[in-house]
Image 1 (tube, rainbow, N blue to C red):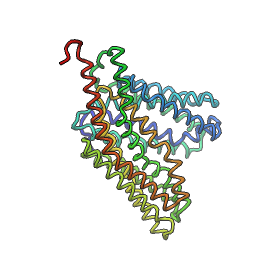
Image 2 (cartoon, rainbow, N blue to C red):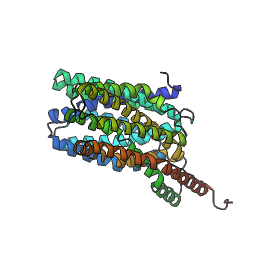
Image 3 (cartoon, rainbow, N blue to C red):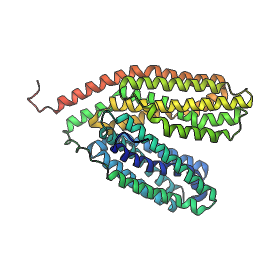
Image 4 (spheres, rainbow, N blue to C red):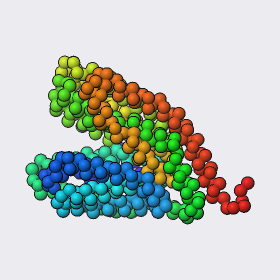
Length: 417
């Protein structure tokens, strides 16, 4: 499918490259950390947890920096530094060097996320913004799939050398990615820095934009469909059903195909607040339907179990696609165009808070409460979806109020009405 515009196509090239690197990395990282660096599983878990906390804490300050400096420059620099970090992986020889690298990569991912969001939301026109973001996501998923295949080939060789060199390859891909970012169109330069007093008011105001932050948390809750897809369903299938384990490969292939080919279709009509609300309802309906279907697969005959799990997985992938589109619609409509990076940072923090608990809670509910647990998961999603439109309207009012206040701050003294 052709991109909505040439500009979207250029950004999608970057998304394809980044997905290629990410897919390769996620496929081999566990083996690389334990077999090549020689870390224990607990050390890997501790290091990744510390890196995750670093990423969480860095998001908002880096978003503010991307607004003041340049979203594109922050994004490109993040890709460049991340490339260097991956090339340094083969030199890691213990926990300290491993921790330094994963923390640096975490900061780069935070910077890249806010830089990308701040740049792309202002680069794309209103008419193409959501469609462009959907096309970018499809390209990212395509790259991720190719990268996962490449990582799988490296593992299949059984060669430590192949696994050791793959991070270097990822670093090269990220260097090319940084070059692609550098060649993207420039946005207008940021406005001159405001006075200290005015900057303090605007900075504090953005941080306490509670409705937008709350909406981000709700978006995080609704995005937990990915936790069910990648964690809970595989565990349920293996431990609680009579379905063959090879079905997991078919489920992954189905999810990948749908994510690449149907994201743009799912995003249609979500470029308005009302459209984003409708997509939220569709996502929640799909999520709930999948929970109900899966809840009844623990006592069915094998062929029926396979059918129910597969249909539930298809519907759950629909929840993923609709929720992503709704999130883009809300973000583009309810964030200040002059402070996109800052709002992207706040959105990252909110979405993390809304979803970080889900692997532990959902796994406990499904595996211990079984059918009641699946219904409880569905109830959590319904509650988040019902509250979302009210919070979105509050976020819209808050944004209008804040932008009006910022505009009045920009009027020179003596020229107020």
